[in-house]
Amino acid sequence: MPPKPPKEIAGGRFEIQKALGAGCFGQVWRGIDKELDNEMVAIKFEDNQAKGNPNQLKTEYDLLRIVSAADPHVQGFSKAHMYGVEGRFSFLAMTMLGRSLEDRMHQSGKKLTPQSVVLIADQVLRRMEFLHSLGLIHRDIKPENFLFGVGPRIHIVYVIDFGLGRRYWRDKRHAPMRTLQTLTGTARYASINAHKGMEQSRRDDLQAVAHMLLYLLRGSLPWSGLEAKTQEEKYRKIRECKETYPIDQLCEGHPQEFGKFLKEARALAYTARPDYLGWRKMFANLRAEIGPQSDSDFEFLKGRETGTLDPIQVYDSLEQPDDKEDARKPESSCCSIS
Image (cartoon, rainbow, N blue to C red; front, top):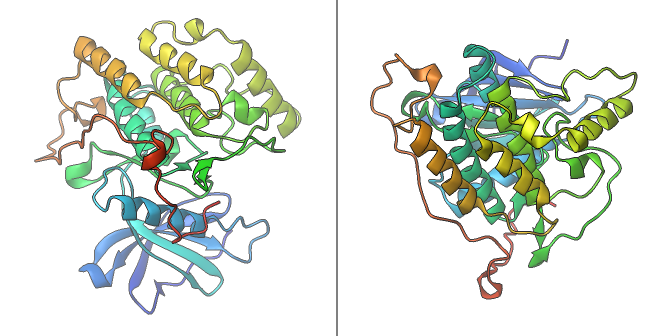
C-alpha cells in the first residue's frame, strides 16, 4: 500500500482531504488552496523513493506552464497552482475536474452515442491542435486522460496527464525520426508507428485520438483483451490486429466519418501537418446531420439541471510551427521539456 502524503503541504497552503485515485507511480488527492479562498484543487503526488519513479510531475508542470504562457484563458487545460517537493513526495496542485470519458462511457451503458462522440471529437481535436501549435505532443491519449469540467464547465473536455509529453519542434525544425526501443503510451490506443518503436509526432496523437473515438462508439476494440504470455507478445498481437483489421469493418454500424479520420491520420507522414480544420469541418457536417443541437447535449447530461454554462471556445484554425518560415517563434526557455 503506497504511503499517504502529509495532511498539509507547502507551508500549510494546501490542505489534503480525500484520495481520488492512484496509478503506477502516483496518487491523486482532493485538497483546498487556502491562498485562493479555499478553492478546491486536485493534487498529484509522486513518491520519490519508489522504485522506477519516472519523475513525470516536473515534466507535466513545465508543459502546463508553456500552455498557460501561450494563452492564460485557453479552454480545456488545467491550471497549475504549484509544483514542489514535500518530504519524500513531489506534488503538483492543479484545477479540480470532473469525470473522465471512460467514466461517462460506462455510466451510459458502456458506449456513447454518435451524437455525444461527435461533440467529443470536436473538442479533443481542438485540444490537440492547440497543444501541437506550441510544438508539443501528448503521447498518452486515452479516455482516462480526458476529463469533463465541473459546474458551468461540466460540458467542456479537458486533456490531462502530460507526464509523457515532449517537444516535436526544436531549434526551429521538426525533431528527426528515431527508432525507439519501447512503446510509449497506452497500447490499446497507440498508433501503429508507436508500436513499431518509431519516434512519435503529431500524427501519432491523432491516430490515438481516432482509436479512442471508435472505442467510445463501440464500447471495445478488436485488439482489447488479447491473450498473451508476455507483454512483448501482447503488444505484438495488438499491433498485428491494428495493421490487419479492416477499418470499414471497425466502423461498421457507425458514421463513416470516424473511419475516414482514422484512415487519414494513419496516412500522415512523420513530419506532416495535420488537417485539424478539415477534420473539424467534417465532424461539424456530421453533427448537422445527426445532431446534437447544443454543445452540451451529451446523453449523460440529459435531464440534469446544469444552469448557465460557459460557451465553448471556437476558432477557425491555429498556426502550427511549420506553417510559415517567418512565423516560427523562438522556443521558451522556461522549461526542460525535451
